[in-house]
Length: 243
Image (cartoon, rainbow, N blue to C red; front, top):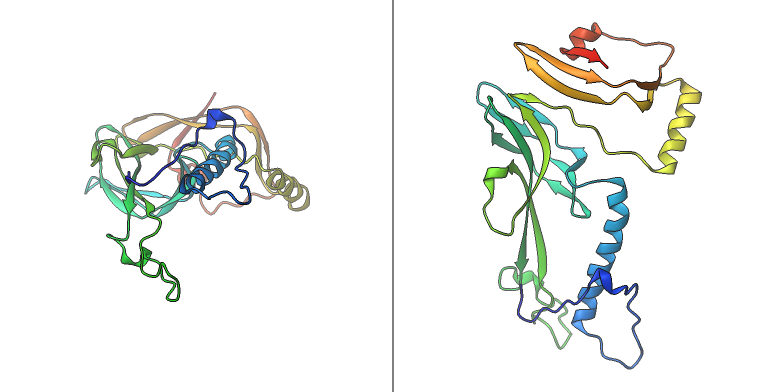
């Protein structure tokens, strides 16, 4: 970290707010503490809804068995209290093993020496073209656990591939009251199909060209009219077994 950087925020101190007082000097440490405090408070709420490695958007996986690679599209993943963008990437995989694909998170400290645009741009100010605050830059990329580059890198698993087969991952929970209210309205007004309770899908294994899944018991709201362009078995291309 920087030699002239100070931060003293600790969650267990119980300090909830910074009370800035007139006539007292503003410390750079206080500004850094303020950022850390807000991030900590936001993370406490976000962790109730999401967990590290949850996909928020994108991040689909396309497996190429011939090349033994997995293409992961760009997406957004919840990691360490924030939803972080991850660019698309191609990752080599072992088609005969169990593989975890996830996000490597790295942070870099960037100063005016690396990025001159961080110098004060106010032409008429006394501090014009002088250095100011540095920046903490995040770098996220898809990879495997064995892809670590630096000692400070952190790996967050997102997808699991079993012998070349992508394991279906449960989406993050929807706990927002507005979302639930809209779902109830849509069910009543439009007769859509929804899972009400249970019915979690889990992977059980593969034998030859058949994949085995287990569907838990539960409740679902089924629309009156169901239209399939293909038979269900052919559409899913898997074998389903129910508990």
